[in-house]
Length: 208
Image (cartoon, rainbow, N blue to C red; front, top):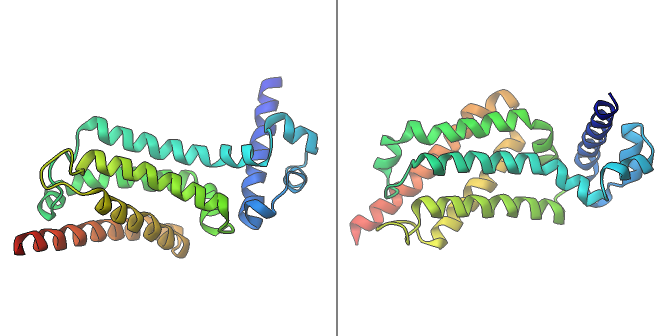
């Protein structure tokens, strides 16, 4: 019973942290304010989290772990181990949409954390979090389609450009659309962006 109560208090503090970080951004948030929203003492917050940064990192870790698990599942399945091209996207379109659908499910499950990242103040911790996600995706894309892994694969510069376009484009889209529009619009955006890039890339190679 005592452990259940501790877990409930910890979760209450965590949810209050999300609320305060969303409203004020990281820099303007304080442990005192988070404690007030949670209805606990400041000392009680420090029993569960070392400091404000520890609480913030705990909040975003679930989303990061979820994305990492999705990527690991794709890599272990051996999908996409072929030269990136418009034909590959058409042939493997169903498979490509599987991890995207899994990401959409993660977005819905962790909506409060995504809202915090999308709507909170764009400060150093926001930049640090987005950079962390970008680096994770860059590593993943290069392991699938990197030039060192296959003939005609993507260069590191191409991976960086494509990843940044996907991440920042998705952030902009998620910040503007209603939740019920997310599955359709996000799927279309990512699919069109990748198909468009590979189409132009393939056309350019054919002209050389």
